[in-house]
Image (cartoon, rainbow, N blue to C red):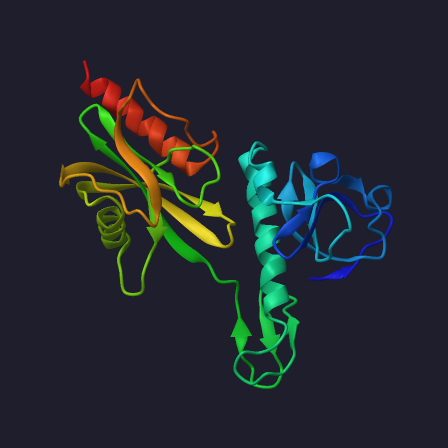
Length: 257
């Protein structure tokens, strides 16, 4: 429930607006509200971290507004809460008015939702399911340099699930579309909330089943099969992509002996 913050309130403060968050000194503010200049702001508790409340404050600051990506090196639990806050702030910002009748909505006091008093419609934050998959061929792994990346990082293939698809069907389709490769033995590994902007990454491992590698020039800048001991620049630790790569590399190494 949202309320006005007093000088005695304390915890972790996630100040977010338009998918950005306030990072003075490059990190999340922590401590008493008075010490970080948030007394009088409206906030809601969205969880706990290390026994302290994590607050969402939906407002912008003139300086030090950054991306939640800057927190990727933090503990996964804190990064996940920051991602939740940014997604909730954007959800509330984009759902001020009811999409059915056009009347103004209000925030639910019991759950993360927006309610319309006029037509009684109820809205929840939307989550876009995505699949991400590491593909092994003997002692090699398929890695690609995505067009949306601004650096030379090579990672595994990923894409959004389409309406009416199973996760396994989405894996096969995305891999074929992006690389012209067929896969088999698709198996689920883990999942990770991914607030860019509101995805849930569902991770899989698979084995090569045929096809000559031909990368999609629109989605990918480059793609190739890489031996486990000759890898390019990889995604940072803590990401589900890095875990998939490391798990696959372990299998590749085992197959080489």
